[in-house]
Image 1 (cartoon, rainbow, N blue to C red):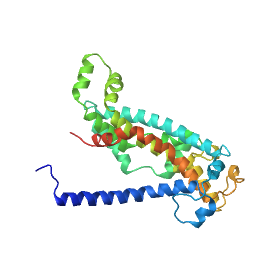
Image 2 (cartoon, one colour; image 1 turned 90 degrees about the vertical axis):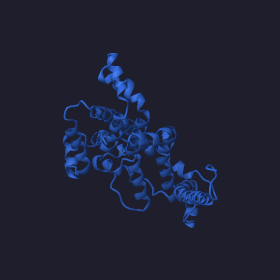
Image 3 (spheres, rainbow, N blue to C red; image 1 turned 135 degrees about the horizontal axis):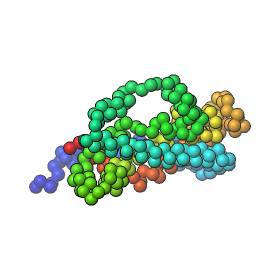
Image 4 (cartoon, helix red, strand yellow; image 1 turned 60 degrees about the vertical axis):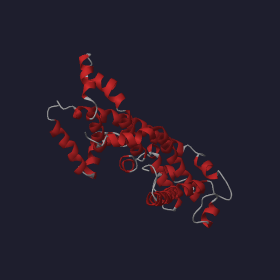
Length: 291
């Protein structure tokens, strides 16, 4: 029968499942090690090279982290940059993608060429820094958002998704007297939730992991996002001198504290994924296929 599996297919499925299980375990084990080490004592971490379940369960690392408002302030900065940056980037990217998806837009191919050109060539580090400085964005949280407003790759995915929507939707809306903005916000966006959710996740992860721009543009340590603070804790743990006056009085943390900070910095992003998972694969695939 057609539904019966042959011996070869069963062996293939078993081999495939085994390999994927091993790869999944290799991927998850480092996270389990970090989580387990964050609840272990410094002596146990020094004794065991790989730790999953600590012998002595302790919350000392987390108590150390939250004993001051330093980490909380850094998380607050990262949350602010992530939320505001994602909303801003999605707003601009959606408007741009919708405009470029309109086949009646004059010079659409030339405009698209300039966007794609920026994916291959850019001004470089020093010119970008000068622009940020001359526009007054230096040492402000806006410097973490404005220079990276649009990711061209994400915008192209949205544009392709919008192009694949049935043309009859817009035509019927125009007959009913809807404006271009009305069509976008009342018809196109509600029909594009999988792509919107997927691109929003891309932007959110990018803003949450902001590091290099914060190092370049922020001199005020109080405005550091959590990723920069994590680097600072690692620097203190390794005993390297650092010239930030605000952090010179913090004692060098143990390995468990470093692991705990990694957990604290990772959990917010992990909590977002389950809510967007159902849209993720569908949005990424549909936005990359042109009919």
